[in-house]
Image (cartoon, rainbow, N blue to C red; front, side, top):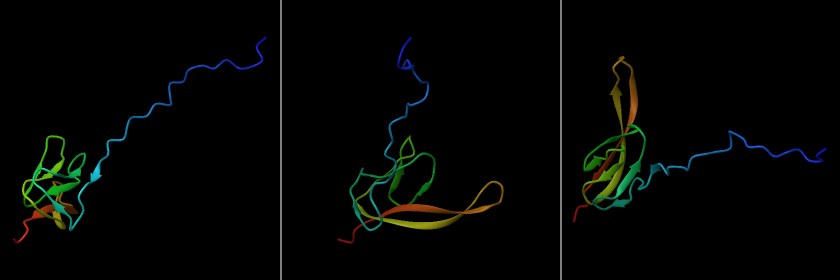
Length: 94
């Protein structure tokens, strides 16, 4: 008779690697052309001036400048309004 319980395998215990989503360049910081401003899933943040959207919904700067976050009221298909965050890159006045 065994003195210890046999160690079996479990179907749980696995976890995926984190995807490092979120804001990479914050409000007031400078961004260079092509730099990633936000990594996201879906349209949590909307595209503003001098920002482009990648295939995986990543927002990146299309010009050099300062990152600015603003809010905008957006109307959905069901008539409800929501406050959406808009990301823009404003060019530096040189």
